Length: 516
Image (cartoon, rainbow, N blue to C red; front, side, top):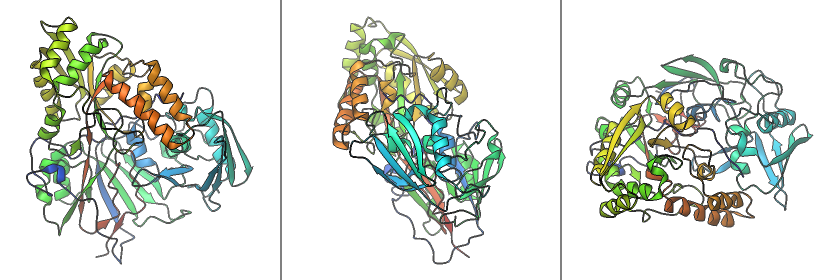
């Protein structure tokens, strides 16, 4: 069974598009409809010397992508600095990258990848199959520190049949294998690279190079003019890390940034002039999850977990946060394989929540504590406390630094309730892993998830994933508050801006600026 244990949750999205009041560019009455799903075409004349300034939220703690967990790294480094054998497009579909084509044997156990023959590393060295073989072997080696190492647990052997052909043999069918190669596990490093070296010594294959990192402020990329593929259309990109939404809004209005990701719905009014700005609305796999400790404390009792879920009106939370989100009811978002609308399970029913708490021995009341990273709006904790109070649960809200959350909740599992954004796509595996911080241990779910990974085809895989997700929801393993939508503000003249899944990766390949 694949068990990816790295924290890929993301504090990055920070409720992009969600806020406390209703006011948006798309509709002043319904911020959920703010923005648009298309953008202007690339202008006929572009400024190839342009610098584009982009507001992001969560700064990486390190740029050592081979060993440091956190989606903030994937967001900027994948596709731009480092490339894998495969990648994902704007619709989250698997596409070729360093491997320009690939094939699978009829038994599903052998994959053959054909590498681009003109690909080079940033130091000018040609990329060969030996580099790809070595890189994959570092991921699959015993004791690997790669955050996605478990994603390649199905790999039996890796070899090169010639300088540009890589052959991977699996131990068993793995329907998630090619998807895994679109992330860190598939990155091709130069053979012999010291993967423990400082990130400033990057030697990727992508269209950009790392230029500077001003910790606490910004990260700068410059175009790789020797790039082997289609060269970047801008000379420089500066990522500005601005957590505060109002400060980010000000930076966009005053021209300090050209693109504001994770814009809040209630702060879009200054961007209503469509001759100056475009507001893009995109899909995400950001599942804002109320974790309920399944392994210890009062929430070990399924009746308590179900009561908590039934006490919370998730639709009401979405409304007070601005509306740019969708209810989901389970661990699989609408854009992932195996999705099913599970919002009818433990739907809002405060009267029944009280009955369940009484059955669990808490009829006279219950005290619980929720830990929430302080990068999220305080309104979330306030709303949860208000909702649970109505059924006799006194909730203490603790807003903590994200690093403190990682230590206490994710690493030590020292919590009762917790809220965090699980941004990664296809991460149902977290509920098939009893060692994950949820503490959820169901042998049926583990069996179904494992079977899904070795299924003969996508339809069989999806049916098993759907079955597992339904059981996870029926067991109230967590409460999925909502799946976020993202709003991006773009100044006029800038095109090719990523719109979907921007918490997971931010591909700059199509970014362009009109020549003045």
